[in-house]
Amino acid sequence: MVIDNAVRSRIRLELGDITRLSVDAIINAANSSLLGGGGVDGAIHRAAGPELLAECRALGGCPPGEARLTRGYRLPAGHVIHTVGPIWRGGEAGEAGILANCYRSCLAIAQDQRFGAIAFPAIATGVYGFPREAAARIAVAEVLRHLAEHEIPATVIFACFDEATREAYRAALGTD
Ligand code: APR
Image 1: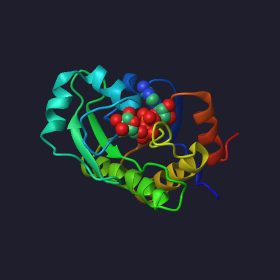
Image 2: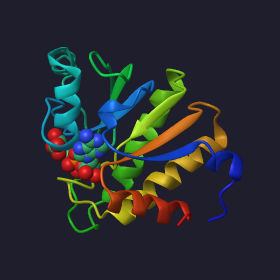
Image 3: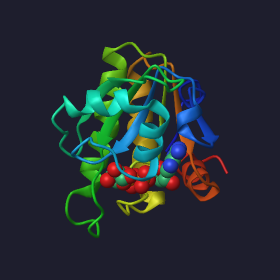
């Protein structure tokens, strides 16, 4: 895949905790209840405080592949975009399409809200078991496609919680 340099320069890989990023929105890898959980979902709710759960309760859940916007409360990020990834069932149950829709749904909200900078965790690659290399390829493909056609968001960060995840994104971006 030939990546336009101007577009590639708008993507950043950061190793660390997404809850510490001071961006317009961080994306939460939630479950369909939107009522919290473990992994990055748990970390975001812990850092944001109880008002986040209160706002999430009022949303009434979210189907896999879709996304919902809330405020960030005590997070440095102004907002949280909650999305629900696919549970990995071997790859023949439409998981790749649902994951691609997660990225598209979040990018559409970011564009609609005119967010300049957003950060994604590696959606569905933890508890939900989606193989991280395949997930990273989907994430990069959807983000590049959006950035090639839209000025907003100006910057997309892939917040990698471990080195293996960062390596998966480096491979997907073709930057070893
Ligand atoms: N910052 C950035 N990334 C993180 C953090 C964090 N603080 N904590 C975990 N991660 C990473 C994981 O290492 C993994 O790479 O987020 C990625 C997604 O993993 P999960 O959080 O397990 O999310 P997912 O696989 O989508 O499963 C969602 O898990 O936590 C529950 O309520 C959630 O039921 C839902 C399910």
